[in-house]
Image (tube, rainbow, N blue to C red; front, side):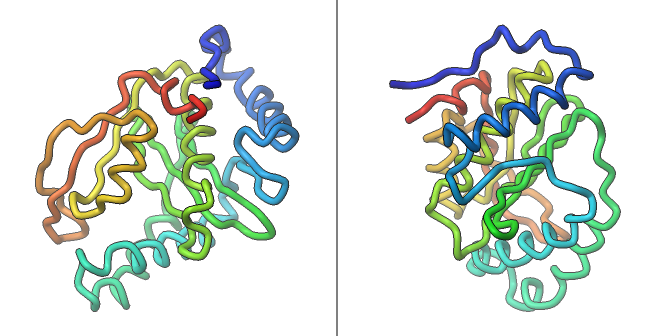
Length: 204
């Protein structure tokens, strides 16, 4: 049986969002919707951005070794992503969540400027294929729906077929390919869109 986002919640105003999100996360710990007994999904704290940067770097090194030059992944990526997360400005409508067990094992970052752009979804290589990414995507979709957003999009490297299949399974639709500038390097990338974010919240 597939569950669907309750659209009646979408009228909640932003001042109610924090209380709703906190309550939803507490519920998730009991029912396992976004979390298992060992894992919870919660809002990221600014004090954790350095940890997030480390996961970002580790994930890129593991996932993109066939796309980006070794020198870039070995050394150049570190100051770039450390600076990015050290200076990032989170706006009220943005969503940055972490998956946590005994430590943070993954994160997702969505910038709503104004259409939600899923900029990052990364899980520590040691915790992949354990539904961490799915839990982060579903929690994010519900948070965006409560904020009044109905759509979202992202870019994924065309060579990352596993990620493309993952997003398609969550209802994402391919919308074409372009060359994207990735820190000074051109990489063929595919755009994936969701016309209805509630499809992400459905149980498969």
